Image (cartoon, rainbow, N blue to C red; front, side):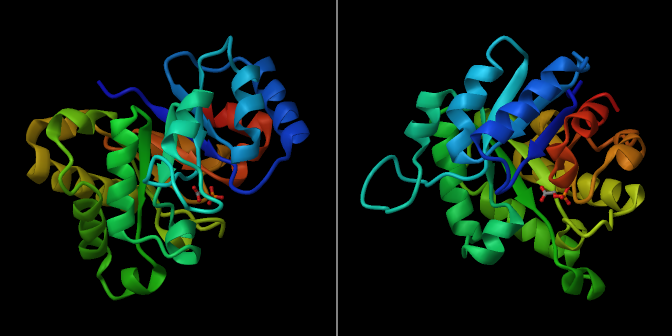
Length: 247
Ligand code: PGA
């Protein structure tokens, strides 16, 4: 049985004061106990949000991380720094980072290895562009991203990885992949993981992401292979985030 996992990706939103308002709003609500809840907040909010969620079962996530532990990497944040704060998860290879910050399957793979080494659970993002889907290349693209990200990662480490399938054309656009298309790709991702790791792939959680909102979360979560959602816009309101968790 895979525990459902709903993760909010706040992206570059919410200063410290606003982040605490949002977290306190979420805490006032009744959140399903049998669903894992993660909030991935900006670096500058991590410490305060960690303190605010300490008596709850909400997990803390970062949105990125460098693959080295320390050194001359101006402006970067290391896994050790995240560990010190008590971060549980880190988003790796979000399409916005691939698109605007030149992340490649190779850097994604290095970050996956570092995160695993430091027991920070990766939320690995993969997904195709509209152009790639329209030319029927989406599976080939996602397969390459999965194989690249998991290169040299050992079978005993993969159960802690969460994969998020996020078709780029559905992110922040209001266009959601149909639940059938999402299920189809997520089944394909599990098959790809199965060819790499065998039966352990059955334990890896795979989320869908891209314009998930209270109105469509139930239909998506009803699909057998969809284990959760990675949510941007709709995670910025306490009421909506609660509805997502309580799908
Ligand atoms: P969205 O973002 O829910 O606003 O489409 C999802 C994501 O980028 O993780």
